[in-house]
Amino acid sequence: MNMNDVILRTATKVITFIILTFSLYMFFAGHNNPGGGFIGGLITASALVLLYLSFDLESMKKVLPVNYIAMTAIGLLIAVATGMGSFLFGAPFLSHAFGYYDLPLFGEKTELATAVLFDLGVYLTVVGITMTIILAIGEDQT
Image 1 (cartoon, rainbow, N blue to C red):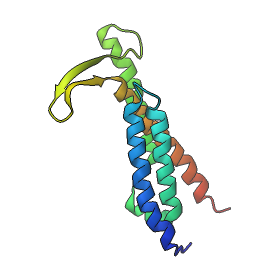
Image 2: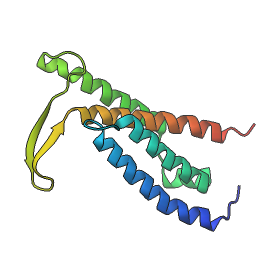
Image 3: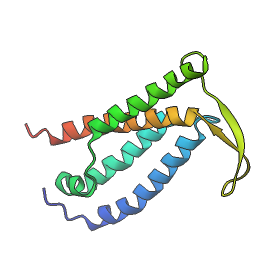
Image 4: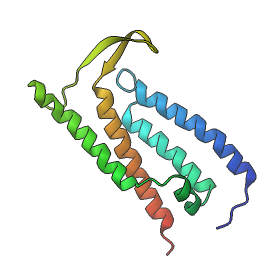
């Protein structure tokens, strides 16, 4: 498929940046506000789908040589390891901890929580599964 839509490709470059920025915001807002790894992963997948629609599959595979099945496995491993990590401290499964630290770049009283690690696993899993399904449907030429 030879697409020659300059407007779509140009708009996609700008819109993808905006979508990915919003996805990052939703990911980090998740443990205190609505958002988190699931919605952040879905938003990221939507940006990737837009890229795959604007440019052909072969070009995108050259630019983004990502194995989404491996990404799913890594995400699941991170999420389960975070949940089981609480066993090391004698806490129930999926117990999370947090603390406030003075970080030079972020200022005083920056909260660091282990829930962000769990959200990272969920994020990678959602992006991996969503992109695997969508690309499998898109590659089907029957």
